[in-house]
Amino acid sequence: MSTPPTFNPEGYEEIHINCQQQKCFDTFYNDYLNELTLQGKSERTIDVYSRYIRQIADYFDRCPDDLSKKELKQYFSHLVEHRSWSAVKSARNAIQFAYKHLLNKPWEWVDIVKPPKVSSIPDVLSIHETQNIINTTRKLSYQTFYLTAYSLGLRLSEALHLTIADIDAHLMRVHIRMGKGKKDRFVPLPMLTLKALRRYWATHRHDSLIFPGSELQIARHNKNVYMDKGTLQKTIKIIAKECGISKNVHIHTLRHSYATHLLENGVNLRSIQVVLGHSSPETTAIYTRMTLEASQNSASLINAMVDKLDIQWAVK
Image (cartoon, rainbow, N blue to C red; front, side, top):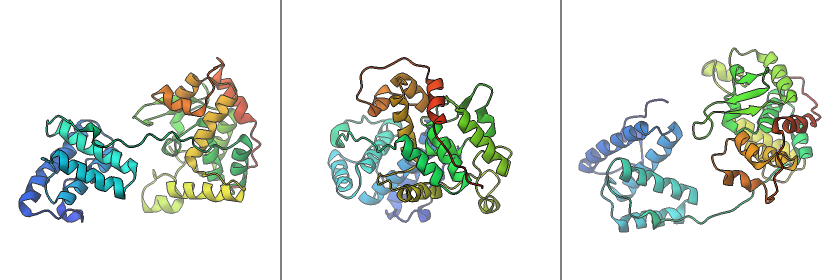
């Protein structure tokens, strides 16, 4: 984890508080960053939390270390009107962290903001649609990436960060390192996916990465840069439209589809939870309304399911 940036008021255009309050905020902000680091928060969490702390300081034009209940309600009302519920939740968590770990004040107003509970079901692709997307993709690197993300049930960042050392061809499994919640896990490796990874790696032979960036990216940055996330996301949407798929398709749709297909092929919910790396079975349960679970050999079923794909490989 990189060291969090020290506060530089000239670097953040949203901070316009007076000099006395600025000095107070500088101390508060740097202590806040240090506490986030000491509590083991990820770089992304540090970035999100610190951004909302800066924004709330700008909103009240002062250091946010003594806000009243009325002021907090005013701020959250503003967020509810102008931002998404996801933003509201992130802001509340950022402020609550400051109260608990920095200000040593009881957080008495957790019920100030309660985002509505949304029980949505994500779009999923059929096996046929998944196969069409992979086959319609005309670039081998993207083809291999989409197959890998699907057949291993990976999040975008997990697939991107795969290394040669993570692929265990002897035990036919893949070591997923530092997944969501900084948790490692092992997932079954289908033979079709192993062959695809070997075929693709032979085209670039990177000394560690499975999905390195383009030669231009590597030249601009360094040899350990990964494929571009944005391009992967844009490409799969374009391909889905070319396939006549009207669903809202993105990389994570492959993971949702994988979980759904496992369930349809008889893999029980507990096995799916482990493979996906879900901390709670309730998260996994979104993929089914069925209550009867069959105890099956999930690795064999996964291999048989993925082996049904008839992939027409691109040349390069």
